[in-house]
Image (cartoon, rainbow, N blue to C red; front, side):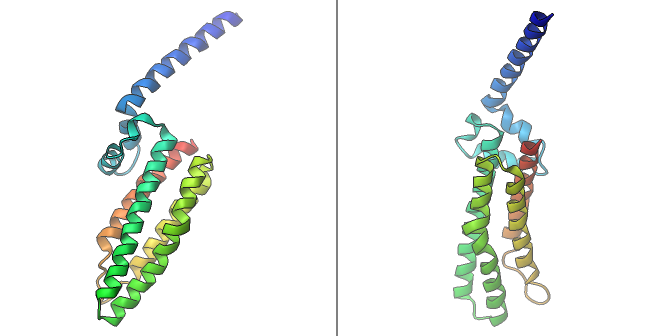
Amino acid sequence: MRISIFVCCFALNIILLASMTKAENGDLVDQICKKTPFYDLCNSTLHSNPLSPKIDLKGVALIMVNNILANATETLSYIERLIKQTSDRGLEQALAFCAESYIPIVKYTLPQAADAISQGRFGFASYCISDAMKEVSTCDKRFSGSTQSPLGDRNGFMQKLVDVASAIIKLLQG
């Protein structure tokens, strides 16, 4: 009886390994991205990274968080350039507020999320990602009324990246 259970489990493991090997050859990214709210964004982001075909779900999550970090870093630089260029006092104050929101995202929150993923602390990674998005949303709210946000498209893109990363982290949490 024990031998037949062993043979059954061994055969099941071979089947699982074969499917994982197939997934590692490119299907994994597709399988993961189908479980996110923005399949095309997920797919293009992951396929633009040369490491993505060779990594696991945890690696995919790290790629997404690092992509969010790169996007947030570029947005912070863009905000700083806009502050230097504007003569509108209200716009300058709103942009300065946004810079103060993005600085901790870039310096602390997203690097902590990446570290948490690396360490298998997926709940904390999820919290960090959510916290980063709250800061971006707070920035967006500064541009209510007569001042139109020059960051709307960037913040919207950031929201989509965060939604994809959150979905991937939920997959890691099982």
